[in-house]
Image 1 (cartoon, helix red, strand yellow):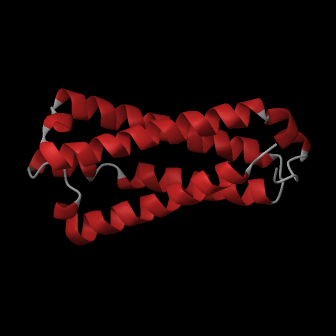
Image 2 (spheres, helix red, strand yellow):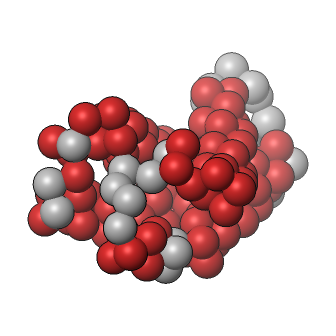
Amino acid sequence: MNKRPIQAMLVVAILLDIVYWTLWFAERDWIASEKNQAYYEFENAFPLADFWLGLACLLALITLQRNRPSALLWLLCAGSAGLYLFGMDFLYDVENGIFTKGGGGAFEAVIVALTLFFSVTILTWAWRHRGELLSGDASSPV
């Protein structure tokens, strides 16, 4: 089983999570799709959920590298947390016309698309390799 791309995706997800929230709290105008109070309140509701996603990704990465059966649990947690966040973001963006608002909307569309791709890929891969993961037979990098 080739787990390297999954490990790379987990690392990228963790780094993007850190960079996004660092920018949001340091210089939110760089990444904000809108500049109004309702949007700021909506985004400010996400740090805890994104922290959970980042923690699940970190634990998935660690347990996957160590060939622990619990890697399946953490991969499923990371993938499902991502799907939940995708659903919240996508629905808000569609209902508020965010995707049609120029550069900020395009940036938001990329975030939403990456979240969906990441989540579906992690969940699909984890489920297809559940037997190997649970048996601790994920030692082969290829």
